[in-house]
Image (tube, rainbow, N blue to C red; front, side, top):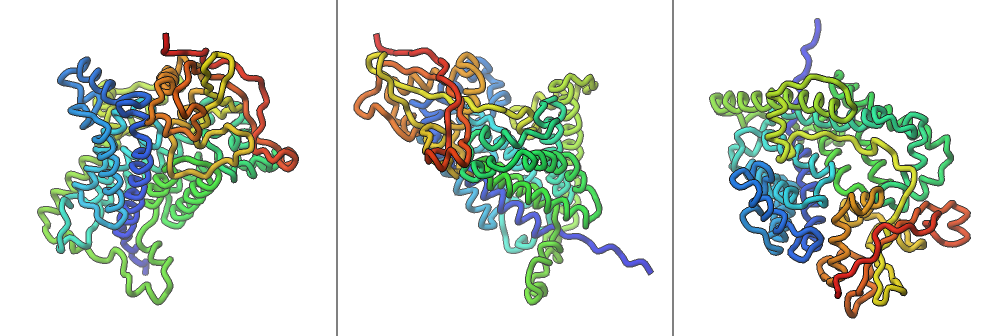
Length: 504
């Protein structure tokens, strides 16, 4: 006689997901809070108050729909810092297991407000991923507004669990698809990983050692990465044994990326998404046999004591699920059309809906390293009092001094250092904020100087600032042994920004 298939529960899965999401929120808020005044404060590189005032002036009554931020009303340095502190505390509460819907919404909206005000410094893919993930988390325990004794044991909405899995699928599959659809030769000839370790934005010391491995190893790495991102995501929808195996592979990939690079909170957030692939029975199996009977995971549905309330919540989550699935399809079609020139018809109503919600970052496209950078230009900013003798500013984490060990800094994200990496790949005309940085250095802004490791003009700011670009590479093992250097320069300086001054 055929046995009935056991019912899978996801109460522990949902709570573990939310705890890791809370930890991610803490990392994100705490990291940005240490830099916020230097980046977007009144005396920062790109003051948020000026940007938002301009938004209010141009957009008028529709300003919030175009730039959703609480700071549209008022924006000062202490308010920016307080928002980061509040969000970090909210993340800690979530990590400790306190996650009513009001708290989930508060941390989500505060981070959205910072993103809207943060300009180029808050435009990373993991910022958008955090918004999309946090939005789904709002519906994980439908109807759960405030904690009470009657709701200590909660049953998550299975439809939202699947939406979180769908987000994990989209993230991983698009990350692999863009690598092939971009036409980049390094992914197609499997040499991408031979460049990756030294060209990533902020390499760590493990990356230096990984870079020393032979080319055949890097080709295998590249092939494995493409296989994991293009094939393994489909196991998310496979029967349970294959699904669990696929989830394990995705988790291992994130841990390896975390080990060999500084990608802020991205890996933690992706791990949270991958947690949704597992069920309570899996987590119970990880416990010692003597503890399994004491922890009967997911076997209570006492939260749904009110049938009418249950049906109302289920209808709401079903509606949200259908809307998100529809918009996800439209968004994917639109991305293919715009990014790769694929002629795919996109419904006008779907385009209008996406345009309306796009500022809220709840439906995004992903795909890191679509085109692998094969060289590493570094911008060296220098100051001078006479226009003849120049002294270099040192950043905290990006390459500078050749003998400085590549740092391990994640989950903190030094956003100025990251943006300097992007700026080096283009020109100063494409990155006008670099001129703003130069002006703040000429003014001697303490908030901006706090973002740097070394100020060569401690007494007073210089009269001139300029920027040059130099190509960097990792040293070989022999060069490292001979010179004690982790880096080497392989080009002469090229002018990036000519000398500028604010003095008459």
